[in-house]
Length: 304
Image (cartoon, rainbow, N blue to C red; front, side):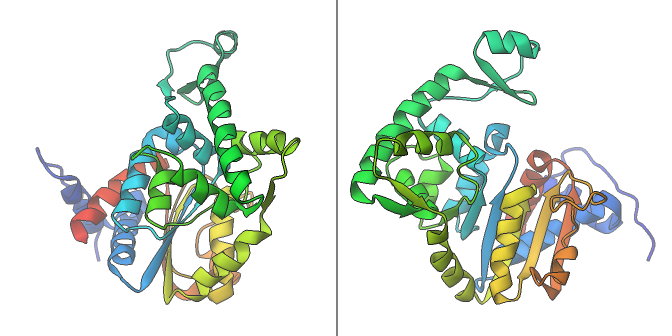
C-alpha cells in the first residue's frame, strides 16, 4: 500500500488531523495514530484495567488536569508516579504554583529563591508552605497508622486534601491506587525522613506488594500508558510479570534505545522479559509527553 500524503484544511478537528496521520501510516504520524487507537481500545474495553506511569515533570508541565480527568472519567485504574509528580501536585494543592521562565540565568534565579525545571520556575516560598503542610498531614496520618505502605500513605494524604484538581485527591476519592516506589527521592521523601527522626512513623515499600499483586492477578487484561521512562515505567511493566505481561500498551518517550536504558527501550523489548505478552498490541511514540499525550487522549475521547 502506498503512503498517503497528509492533507490539512482550515478548521479541521484534532481527530481529523490524526485521521490524516492514520491514512499516512508511516513515521511519527503513523505511530501517533496507532497509539491513539490502542489507547481508545484499552479505555473502551471493560475487561482491561489501565495502568498509567508518570515519569518526568508532567505535573509542573501542565498535565495535572488531564490526569485528574482520566481518573474521574474511569479511564485509568492504577497509577505509578514519580515522587516529584506527587510533590508538585501537592505544592499546587497547598496553594503554590508553577511559573513560566522569564529568561533569567540560573544564578539570578538562585539568588531570588527560584528553582528551574527546563522553562518552568518554582519558588522556594511555595516549598516552605509545602513543608509545613505535609508535616501537618504526617502528624494526622502517623497518629492513626504508625506503620503504613507507600500506597496507603498517598491515599491518606489524598483524603486530607481539598482540591478538586489534585490528582492525588481525585485518585483517593475514586479508589484509584497510586504507587510511588521512588517516593524517597523527592521533597516528600526528605520530609518523611526528617519527620521520622522524632516520630514513630515507618513507611513500608514492601507493604505495597500484596495489594499490587492482587490487582494484577485480579485483572483479566492490563493495558499500559507509559509516560516517560525510568523507575515508573519499569515498576508498571515488572508488576505485570506476575500475570504474563501487559496485553496492550502505549509508550511516549524522548529517550533513545542505543544506550540500553529502559526509558529508551521499545516496548517490544518487554516481550522478551514477559513484561508484555507475546501478541500484545504495542506502540512507542518518540516525542514530548506534554505534546503527544494530550493529542492522542483528545482523539481517543472521540473514539470511545
